[in-house]
Amino acid sequence: QVQLVESGGGLVQAGGSLRLSCAASGRTSLIAAMGWFRQAPGKEREFVAAITKSSSRTAYADSVKGRFTISRDNAKNTMFLQMNSLKPEDTALYYCAARLNMGVPVMSQLYDYWGQGTQVTVSS
Image (cartoon, rainbow, N blue to C red):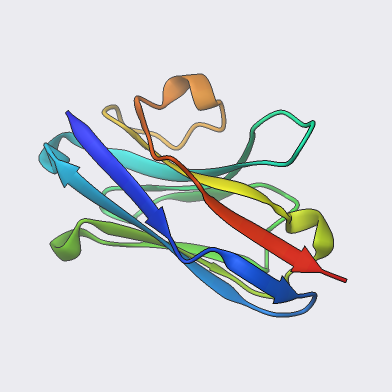
């Protein structure tokens, strides 16, 4: 099994930055790719970004391209999401996810493990 714990969320003004972290534990050697998803109140969970184990491949939602950067530190079993130029519409509960197969899919159903989420609130 794999356990995921997110941190780094908080309240920030529009235009500001936050850095989210996702610490993985357990059978981390099985993880092939990881991703970030978010869910705003009353909306469905949506894809934000994903990265392969080797960091050779990444994917981003159009809404965050150029503003967010996903990265991994495999030595520390940690994934990051650097979020810059934040907008009020980025407000959501951000989830970390991991999958055992290769690829960086945008569908949440293709991820095997999930964290509990960290809240990001962007004020206007």
